[in-house]
Image 1 (cartoon, rainbow, N blue to C red):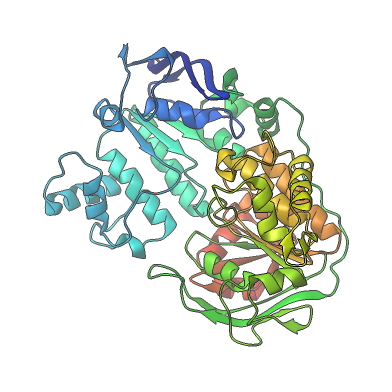
Image 2 (cartoon, rainbow, N blue to C red):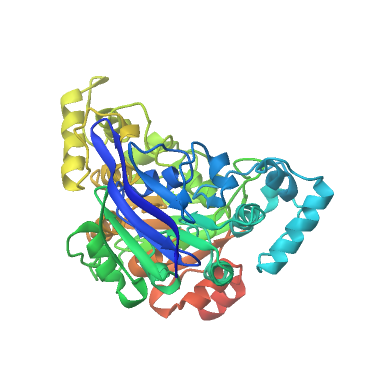
Length: 504
């Protein structure tokens, strides 16, 4: 296959870091090309350069044999380059057709656009109702809106950034069928994902970045996931290992927990009940928007619940706030790391003190002991290999993976009796994900109870003792992970709670 896009010597430096260093490779016409690398390897800078969001310091690109140097996304789209971002850019209050129109330079009348949306969505197996309000769509349907919006541009190159992070296995199958169809029709695809088995199943070529430089390329179909991960980080990786002990006494009991949604487009919790035992990892899976945020807020104390619905070590904590629950040993880590789990403009020392002051003995007669706060931040940085100049830098200066390691490490090192985490390895590379998973397993091996709420099914099946699906605010019966297949998990995520009860 001839090359559609050629990159030659692309270099981009920021103060203190070279994001891309002499990057060269080519994407074949009609090829599905993976871009791999750990957090901070330079993938985001590179695709932003291709899409016109970043101007390189040196180097050049050629698209279909002609010079290509977009200065803004509009120019990239006009040249036939489209991009589906990891985080959706949709307005909940608008319809599908209205959202699609917002992304077009000269949109046709809504009625004509609706007909085009139906035609394209049917052609590529992505059924969509143009009149439906986006706030009422599932995460998979929202992604279809983003993809169809790109397909209406008839792109020659489609860039996809972590496209399966919010999809069920069945939805992943639909997406892959669409991408293969596009490839067969001649569209090139640049695919970014930390899910290496997906890369092996879908992509026919891969370029591996490390430290901003290209360190190699391969055919992922002929390379194992373990080898891909090791080439990304430049070191041998080992799979997380569980302690293997039998579960102990019940630490947390949730009984008929019901709460209204957090927002107009949120999901109410409906009669959620489960128990968590000492030494156990309970995995809770669900497509985004099915009540995960509401559940975490109810367990953290950010939202108070009906008396008797949340019982921690025999005490009713339903009406206690976050500070009281943390003192007792019930700790949580929310999904949004920058803004919720960490204050962006505060230093790592200050962020360490925000949640660790009471449990790490930083308070002295109402005053904060900054020496202890710095020591704790330094301990988190050292124990969890957080790549940062020091504890005095702002949280926003860290890469996503390094901030995630800091946030999880901050909670783990407070030695909680129960830790509840939502999306603990969201968007982090294989090495960082492995380190975080091992820390959670070690915590459980030490006698704590751990709840992992995640959309990464491979992660949940790897580290959980039991698994339950959250669908439309209802939690299914927890099932031993050893009894599950990926097909059955997909059915559970789709709401097959009767199936769970039958097999439990």
